[in-house]
Every structure is written in C-alpha cells, then in structure tokens.
Length: 109
Ligand SMILES: [Zn+2]
Image (cartoon, rainbow, N blue to C red; front, side, top):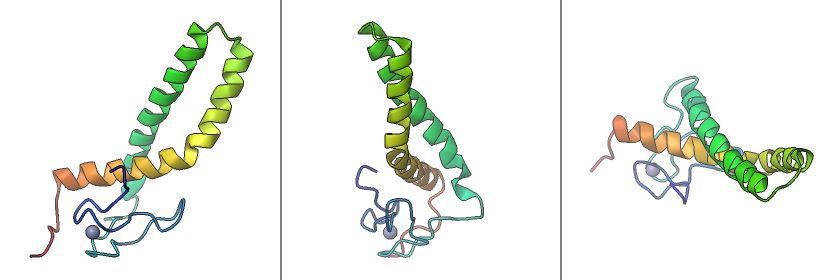
C-alpha cells in the first residue's frame, strides 16, 4: 500500500502521474477501475484520512494555545497541501481492501 502497487501482483504501479491512474496494472493486467463509479468508495477512505490528519493538527495547535484564526489558516493550508497525497492513498487503500474481499480475477498461474 505504501509503495502504491497493484493489489494482485504487488509490482505494478497504480498511478501513472500525480493524479492519473493506470487503467490496468502494467505488470499483471488487473483492471483497476472494475466498474463505472468504482472509486466512489475511495471517498470514504479519503474522508477518514482527512478527518484523522486535520483533527490531529487541530488538537495539537489547540493544546499549544494558538489562536483560532491561525489554526484555521494552518488547517486550510494543510488540506490543500495534503490533497494529492490523500487522493492517491485513498484510492490505493480502497483498491487493496476491495481486492482483499473480492480477489477476482485471481493472479493467473
Ligand atoms: Zn498487477
């Protein structure tokens, strides 16, 4: 998951560029977008990652006694900066979890 590799062969990269996903694994040929709207489920993962990371920064800054204006500005900057990373990892996590529950088609032997 950390290396953003295919959930079936663990070798093929999932992303072609920063926000562009391969249609299928360049190594084993697994089709990444199984059906139209497949990555809608990744939004739930993205939401969870966003809540966890912004809550951690918010609580830390609150404990440090920062003003709410500064906290708001930092959180806004944080969300903008982490957006591409959250976009990628939410899709990678979604692919791996979904493939873990439904490994079809399995890797040909
Ligand atoms: Zn693969």
